[in-house]
Length: 147
Image 1 (cartoon, one colour):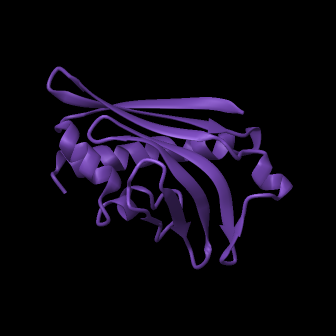
Image 2 (cartoon, rainbow, N blue to C red; image 1 turned 90 degrees about the horizontal axis):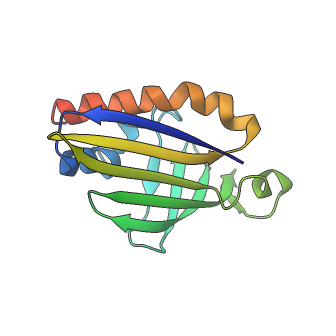
């Protein structure tokens, strides 16, 4: 797997950016670039299961590797959901199972520096190179207008 990293400077406090990332109202807005109607189901506690859902019965299964509010959220991806069925064992899933996706927030000169780094397979790299900058621009837009 390869690691991709994106950083964006946002003119809003870390608390605001954090809320935009993980709030039920705004999460579907900034993640729509990945999957229209996306949503997340979890209790947000470290070690907890996370379902990243899009469409009818599709999505990813992950766990929260770290949750330090307003500072770091780290997910470990474990499997996928296809047609409502959890898959941890298929060959396609095994190619990227164990991948991490990390969100780091730092205060820099009164603004928030948001860095997202994630492990990707070669087959997914082009897709994420295209979609992540758009997603982060949407986070910036939402945070700076105080959504």
